[in-house]
Amino acid sequence: MTADPRLTPVRPDLAARRLLGEVGAERFADPTPMVVTTPLAPLSLVPDPDAALDTELIHGERFDVYETADGLAWGQSALDGYVGYVPADCLGEPGPEPTHRVTALVAQTYPVPDMKSRPLGRLTLGARVAVEDEGERFVRIAGGGHLARQHVAPIDEVAPDWVAVAERFLGTPYLWGGRSPLGCDCSALVQLPRQMAGLGAPRDSDMQEAGMGETIGGNVALRRGDLVFWKRHVGIMLDVERLLHANAHHMATTIEPLEAAIARIEASGGGPATRRARLDSGGCHA
Image (tube, rainbow, N blue to C red; front, top):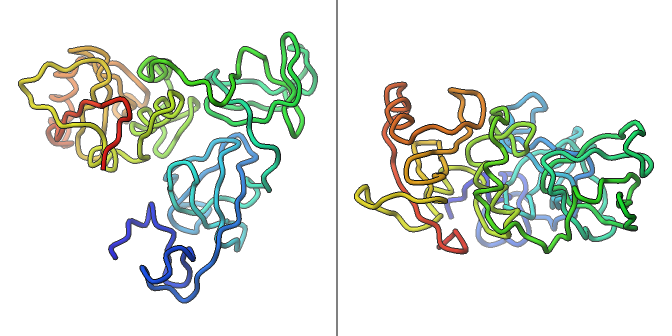
């Protein structure tokens, strides 16, 4: 079995018990379900606190832990299957089941239901919370804190237009591995808005290129929601001409004419566009 280390919880010394007989490892273990208790939790593929950021987990997301050592928990995201090392102090035991998600780009958490009180912190789009009480203007969440009522929605309520969610990221700083409105990369700009709309998307652009939508030829006019891929890059069409993408050239999420982006990326050594994809309602296919 050839395993993608980003999606398969296997190391030479340890693997998930469900992979017994499929992969080789010195020992196998069952996961311990944990949840992210900080606003965001960095995940890296290697056990080094100074390693590059490969992705982020968002508050309230589940992370299945197979081992904790030297302050790092090794496991797998229950949401998109990404495997890696997360600081153990970003995780906690599961509490009440989440009932709501944050729908604001950034939501302040207050100690009392008063917007003039000093905020305890902030949660970002997609954060999962358990609402214990709903007031006229604020909701109280498990673990302490209050959020503005208009900044959350029931967890089963989905955005009607995932591209409109992505458009809200315009101007967001570019961050390799970032997965929030505080900083995101190109593939997170596809994944997170689609998750908010109840749709699927793998985490990285090469996974998205390999597994999302149907390929369309260059003679087919592009339309809103189509994806355009390059090697290690992806953008979202807003209409027949304009591309929305988080990119390192502008170090931000920007809108560019597609033809200008194609010319610029190729001139800078990024190569030509490699695929155009049209998504169905589910967005992913085997």
